[in-house]
Image 1 (spheres, rainbow, N blue to C red):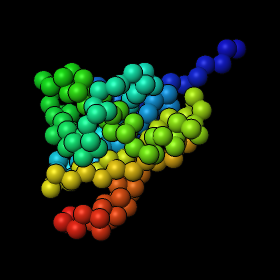
Image 2 (image 1 turned 30 degrees about the vertical axis):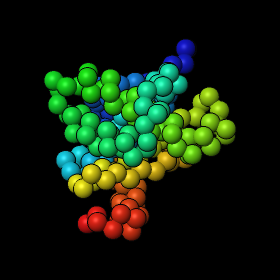
Image 3 (image 1 turned 45 degrees about the horizontal axis):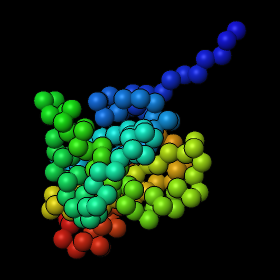
Image 4 (image 1 turned 45 degrees about the vertical axis):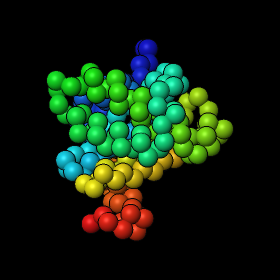
Length: 164
């Protein structure tokens, strides 16, 4: 009998499959976006090639990349803009990730089987908070991502002062 490996998809983890979540989560970097404006939660899978090849946006400040993500994330669910949004959002997310100290530390310590997980909260007031999760983190279910999002939100309330 030949052993086969079960292919995991985001549907196995109770996520809704979108153009941004195609592929095997165990082979991808995962970006969880919790948008408090739209009251939505999404998972975006980015493969190694997209992270490694992206040189766009590296000259932008983290604040500018965060603003671009803030603007583009509203377009994720608009089917007419999906391809254009993906072409812009993935390099911007990759640029944000690669511009952080967390990414630099991860590069030093990670092996080729590790993938990043980052949680991004987007708030009503053009503010965004993010945190890296440990590289060994399994693919989170939506409710698990929300628990971590609420912890980050509480930290951001102290940091930003104008979040409610």
